[in-house]
Structure formats: C-alpha cells, structure tokens
Length: 451
Image (cartoon, rainbow, N blue to C red; front, side):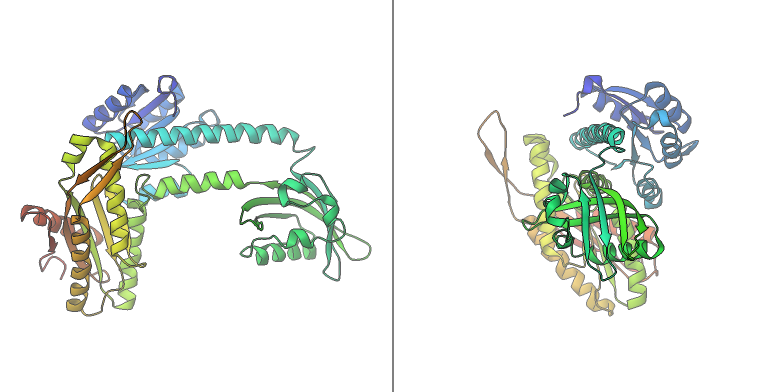
C-alpha cells in the first residue's frame, strides 16, 4: 500500500459538498490533500504541488476536465502526475471515453462511491503509478545501454528459396526465445515455430514487405511456449540486400510483456469495476448505444433493467464494508449466471446494477414476456440467502448469513423510438416504483413512457 503521509493529492470538484467529503476521507486516511473548484485551479495547484494524483471532475465551471488533462500531459515537468477523472450521472460517456481512450487520463472513478471503494481505488492507482515509475526508471536505464545490448542483438537472413536463419544472435536469445544462438544459426525454424498462432500471418507479411521494399522492420508480436506461457516481443531492424538475393536484417528484439500487461491493467481499471470486475458505466453506455443501433437494424426488442439491492445497508452497518463487498461480488456472480452471453451485466455504483438484454423477440408482447422471465429469474436468485465468509486476520473466519433482495425496474425498447436518456429515466423510475410497492419485485415501465 502507498505511504499516505508522503503522498500529496489534488482534488478538483465544483460541488463544495462533494469536494469537502472527498477531501475529508482522503485526509483522514493520511494523505496530504489540496483542493480546488475550477480548471484554472487544477492547473495552478498541479504545477505548484506536483501531486502523485490529480482527482479531477470532468465538468467544471470554466472548462472541461479532459482539456485540463490534455494540458497537464503536455507539460514535461508534470509527466509523473496521474490524472483520474471523477464523474457522476451528469456526465456522458463521451467525455469519459475522450479522456481515457486518448491516453489523457490514467483512470476513471464513477460516483457515487463508498469511502472504502474510494480509498481502495486511490491506493490501486498509486500502486499502479509507482509500478509505472519503476518501469520508466528501468526503461531509462536500459535505454542508456540500448546502443550496446538492446535485448537480443541479431542478424536474420531470408534466402530466395524462403528458408531463413540467424547468422548471429546474442546470448539473450536464450531468455527471449528459449533457444541458444547455436540452435538457430543455420535454421530459424525453432523461433518461427513458437510464434503465436494469431500473429503468424502478420509477422510473415511484415517481414515480406520489409524484404520487398527494403524498409525497416518494426513489429510487436507474441510468442507462445510449450508450457503455455505467452510473451510480447518488439523487433526493430534494418534490411540490406545480399549478392545472392537474400535479405539480411540487423537489429534487436526486446521483451515488452511487462509493458503490455501494464497497459492491459490500466485499460481494465478504466473500463471495469475493480470490485466485481463487471463493465462500468463507460462500457455500459457504449453497449447501450450499440444495442439501440442493432435493434433498429434487426427489428428485435431489447430490455434494460435497473436493480437496487434491498436490505444492503444493514449488512455494512453491522459487519463493515468488507462484508458488503463480499455480497456485491456474489450478486455480480448470480446476475451473470442468470443472463445469456449476448447480455451485459454492469455495476452502476454502490449497490445498483444494470442488466442489458439483447436480441429479444421482434414482437413486443413476446419480448416483454422474455424480459419478465429473466427479471423474475434474477429476482428469485438474488433473494436466496447469502453465506459470506469473512477473513479477519485478527480472529477466526466467520460465516455471515444475510438476506437481501432486489427491486427491479425494466424497460423494453427498440431502435431509437425513445432517447437513451428517456429510457434510463423511465427504467430508473420503475425501479423506485418497485421499491415503493414493497421491494423484492419487478416493475415494468408503464406505457406510454416507452411506447
């Protein structure tokens, strides 16, 4: 875990209540917290304090958080600042995706968010930042040596008859490819044999293009070993034509597996809930738009469900947030078991979940019946008792039995007969109607809301 006392965080939010609450939670956890409420303050405070993290509201009175992130990322002195976008229901997925997919933001936190989850996300981001700093330092050291020994230094020869070899390869060939330089000096097949099946065609095509045009060969690709281990490699080399028509490349190959894993981790944290591993709001928004377009073409209805857990708060109050987290994880698993491969289960925040059902019947009555069956299956599954095993190092493990149900709102839609905002408002309203009607029930949107 990061050392809070030595860690400065800048928090920017134009909502004073949210700003105070967030700052209080982080300060109580031991972090040094500096706050502001505008884009101008975000830039000024970041330049002044050089924080480990900048927690930045997407929508600010004098600018957009994504634009602030762009400015920060353009300044060399701020390269070590991790930018985390904060957003609630008021922000569309467009701003979120703009920051994340362009690399301007390093992560995203959707609100509302519990104290436990906020601290966990901040700690995860700090640990990720530390890992990236360590990786940058390692890469910087290796870059100083790159002119001497950049991974595997090699020569690769492709003959006119299609055969190939490595006339020279440094000893790092053993660690990169698992073969000795001697094994491939006359025949490159031991290396070619472990190219990942999904990458063989692209690697062969890139080599052929480089040989034909005598252009640099630069390629990221995977190798797969007999034990199932997969590594990412990067090759960089320059070709020359030999007298017999062969092509000889001079270059190096490096292992970039760690960098690829880091990229995957950042991507997962940006688009998936860290507790349940379910898709988050960004992914849900994208799939909703896709679903509307798909249903318009196919003529099949879709369904959107909002679920809010009943009797969840007493579990947190009695046994703590760790028990609540266990229940949320179990809820996510039960939801996934109730739906089909084509459906999407997303955590909306707190104890709220969303289910998107795709490819229902083209007849509205039958589609409604299909959605009702799945909704009832979900309601029944979530109403089963929860046996939660707590893991407290200070005492023996304990099993908690908790009863928790769900109030479910359902909307049936097709194409763009209703806007996405209208669908969300209608299904949210139906969910609260289910709660008001006694909880542990399914409530469909009443016509003509989604006629």
